[in-house]
Length: 527
Image 1: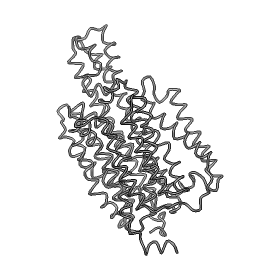
Image 2: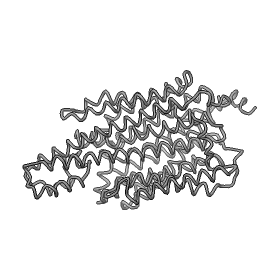
Image 3: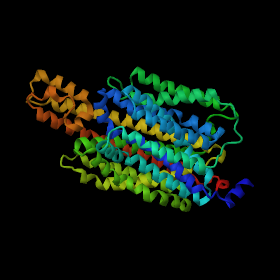
C-alpha cells in the first residue's frame, strides 16, 4: 500500500535531491584522480620520496574501500540521509585539513579522512536514488548519476591541471569547501530520510571487524605488491592476501548465522546482482586503473603539460554527460544486460586499439579514435550497472547492496593498478636488461650498474626518458642518448602489454555480465 501511494505521489523535491547526491558523488570521485597532476608539485613542496608520495593516492583509496560497506549498512539502519550528510561534513573537513597540511605525513592522514567521508557519499548515493525514484524515472536518475560518475573520474586531471598551474596545489582541496557546503544545504532540505525498518538496531561488531580486516588486507596487499623488492610471491604480500581470504571466509560463516547481518552473503545467490558486481570490478580494473598509465603516456612520453593532458581526456569524459541519461532510458526499454555487456565490449575494443602507441612514429592523434570509442563505452556503462545492483534487491537493503557494489569498484581499481603495474614493471625491466646489456658503446664493467639504476628508476623514468629521474649519474657516460632512447622505447612497448591485459579484463566482464544478468531477477514491486 505504501509503495502504491509513493508511486502515485512522487516527491516533488526528488530532482533537487538528485542534484544534492550528484554534488557529493562528484567530489568523492573527483578526488580519486584530481591529485595525480599535483603530485610533482607536492613532492617539491614537502621534499618527499616516491613511497611517501604514493600514499597521497593510496591513503584515500584504502580508507574509501575499507569503510564503504560499514557506512552503507549504518545508513540502512540509522538513516541514509543522516550518514550521507555526515559523509559530506567529514569529507569537507578532511579537504580543509589537506590544504593546511604542514608535511607529507599529515597530508596522507588527512587524505584518509577524506576517504572516510567519500565512502559514505559514494555508497549511500545509489541507495538514496533507489528509494527516491521509481519506474522509468529511476533509470533516468541513474543515468544522470552515471554521467556525473564518469565525468568526475575522467575530468579530474583537467581540473587539477588548471588549479595547480593557475593557483596552487592547495586549491585542489579548497575547491571542495564551497561544493560541500552547497551539497550539505541541498541534502538537508531536499533529501527524504529512508532506512531499513526491519533491521536490528544493534551493531554487528563481528561483521564490522571481519569485513574491515578482509578489505584492508586485500587492498593494502594490492597496493604494496608493486613496492621495491616485493612481488606476488613475497611473504608480506602472501600474508596480507591470505589474511584477507581467511577474514572473508570467517565473515561469511558468521554473517550466515545472524538475523540482521552487516552483509547478507545470500545476496550473491542473485546471479544478476553478482553480474553487476563483476561488471563494476572489471570496469574499474580495465579502465579507471588505466588512467594513471595514460597520464604517464601523455605527460611524460608525449610531453604534454598537466592541463594539456586533462584537455585530451575530455575525449573520454565528455560523452558521459550525453550518454549517461540516454543509457538510463535505454535500460528501461531493452534492459540493462545488453547495455552493460555491449559497453564493456566497446571499452575492450577501445583499449586494444590503444596498442598503436608501440609504433615509434606514433603521436597523440593515433589515440583519438580509441579515446572516442572508450568515451562512448564509459558513457553508457555506469547507469545500468547501478540500476542492476539496486533493482535486484529489496528497497530495505539497497544501502548494503550499493555498498558492496561500490567496494567491487574500489577493489577493481586497486587490483587493476597493482596487476597492470606489475606487468608494466616486469616488461620494462626485461627490456632494459636485454637492450642495455647489448650496448657496445658502454664499457662492459659499467653495464650492470646502469641496468640496475635504470631498472630501479622504473617505468616512470622510462616514460620521461630519464629526464629528472636521477639520471645525473649517467649523463657523462658514453651512450647516454642511447640509454634515454632505450628507456622510453621500453616504456611504450611495455605499455602495449598493459593495454592488452586491460582489454582482456574488460572482455571477461562483458562475457560474464551477459551470462549472469537475467531479467527474471529484477523485482517488479520496485518499479
